[in-house]
Amino acid sequence: MKIRVVTGVALGAALVIPSAASAAPTPDHLSGAAVYAATGNQLSRYSGSGEWHPLASFGAAQFAASPDGTKAAWITESGNLNIRARGRTSTIVSGLQGSTPCLTPVWSTDSDKVAYPSADGTIRAVRADGSNAPRRLGVSKGVCHLAWSGNGRYLAGYTSTGDALYRLDSKTGKTVIVRGVRSITHVQSLSPDGSKAIVALPENANAAGAGTWPATFRPVILAIPTGKRQQLPVKGNLIGATYLPDGRLVVRTAAPHTQSGNAGGHAHNTLVVFDSAGNEIQRLAEPPKAKNQALLQVVS
Image 1 (cartoon, one colour):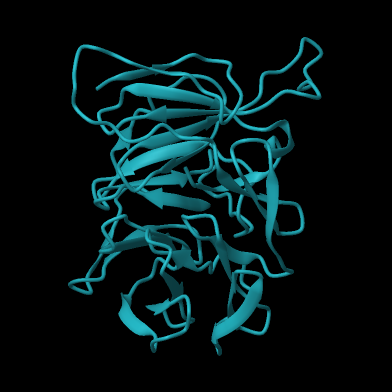
Image 2 (image 1 turned 180 degrees about the vertical axis):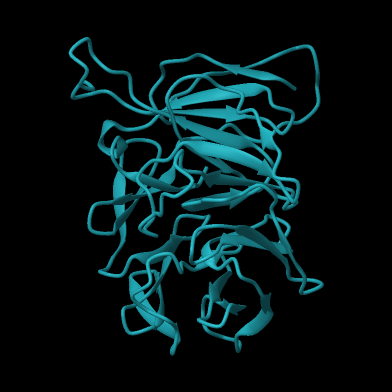
């Protein structure tokens, strides 16, 4: 079933019109619920209907929000992996490398486990409630800004020198390098089957990123391992993109500018949603408050 959404509607109020051409089931349309990070690593969940809820606040720059939008994970300056859930903070792993912004943890699709890198390149996973010992997933040179595929098999990240992208197969323990990557500053997400990665590639191949999570970035989709670029199916000023576990692609486009060149006080970014076949199925207006914040997770 193909769906069309009337554009220009606020988050949580989109009108979805089913087409009579097909009766095939489709995923529920998004409400706009999402997790954002503001300056100073203030993580908040937007409900999609106008409400904001604080999720976590911390000094460390190595952080991630769970896909269900209810938990946060971060590595402290002293090397502790902390989890914030249900209003409580717990340390579930110690002895990691702190003070390194690019070494971020990453959540599994079911928001149950967290994977994290060690200084020697070993990637491990642990249940977020700390109920099991960490499990070794493999060793990779790509440990920065880890992304975890929806099927749970693959993890991808870039090197600490920012000159290569690697994907780890946690089933076999083998890694592959993505060809053609010479400079990279961010990995946002993997497709559910791990065959594609959404990344940020600087125009200047010699540019080195700070390793921190970007508020916005020009998204590039790379096939793994060929490095072939996939055309993003939307025009405009693109400032982010992410895959959802069911294969939908969400592309973030920047707020329009006024004639003076400055975005209006109530201008908003837009989320454009595509199905796994590349058909546009929905547009959502982000809340104006999120305009200059990093989009960590699209929840629902």
